[in-house]
Length: 324
Image (cartoon, rainbow, N blue to C red):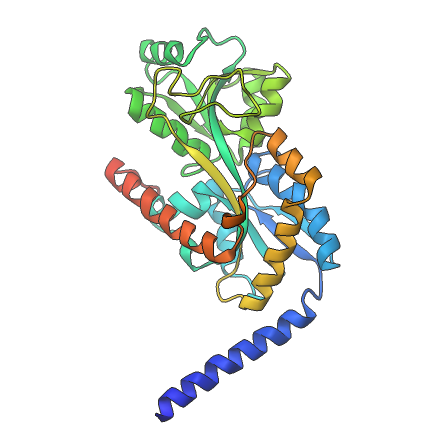
């Protein structure tokens, strides 16, 4: 009975301390670490909500890019940060899903982060340089098979969303592509536009503006149906490769053991931004998908992260892929 009383007292004390901390939170600027170079989908989406969150929280919300190792360098930094709500992470399918199984020496478990909220779903596309002699997804597959290990595909590092999507395409279609890692898909996109690489399997926020501007060509959306922002681009199913279905996502998390009341305050600020009509339209114009009401809670995101880690762990172990 004594041990139970002590446990109950400890829980109540922890809650009281967390509530007291949240009452004064935030006490200084908040930094959202983007673990990729500036200009990529993770960076673009996170920047869309910072101003609105700053107004809600009455403190500046700033973006800091900490790129490298498929997003694991910046993610590790946040995992070890003080759990006071002033340092957050904008992660994605790669850094918060697949990395745990892919990197042998990873220093964090994505499931340990305090989930704040989903930022957006991000459909993926197969895009190519303007002068690549392939007009369709089937044409790209034929071209890649005719030039094994010669077709270059850019990504944001091993285990990143762009790497996983093209790796999946490679295995699904029986191709041998040459994967070229960058510190983010922003720099990779610049090289695709410039013709230094042949293709990318990248997400909507990085792809749609360049496709609309005519800087690159999109051959297919990696999902069963077309994306509303790009109605003229066929789905992978329409293009003859129905199994090519990789829908990415971006989410905001905090260091492990961040008090629940602080997480709740951050979640409320994020959701206030995401339900602003102007911000929502900007997200949709990029081809991304704002979270639905049922996807807006920290509890939903926590379960989602666990499921993604499990799912991609199975895929990566089956493929025998790993990074030292």
